[in-house]
Image (cartoon, rainbow, N blue to C red; front, side, top):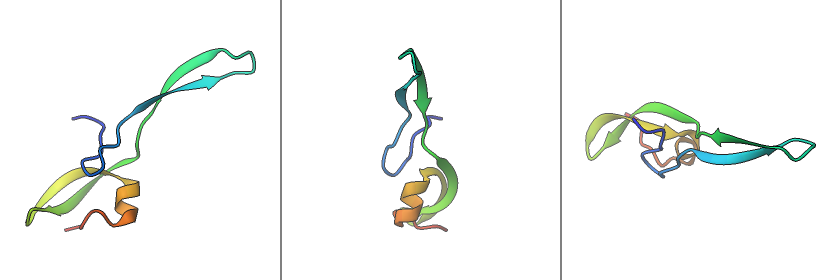
Length: 62
């Protein structure tokens, strides 16, 4: 299962951490996904949603 929000499509991103000597460390920033029971097309389904979508009210909990 991909680490991707099923509502907004937010997915992991690559970022560069820089030290004082400007060495580059590539790391991934992953979205804060939560498994939630939600109503999808009239039926209850367990989906993975990011917390920003939950806070914004884009998900109707079952």
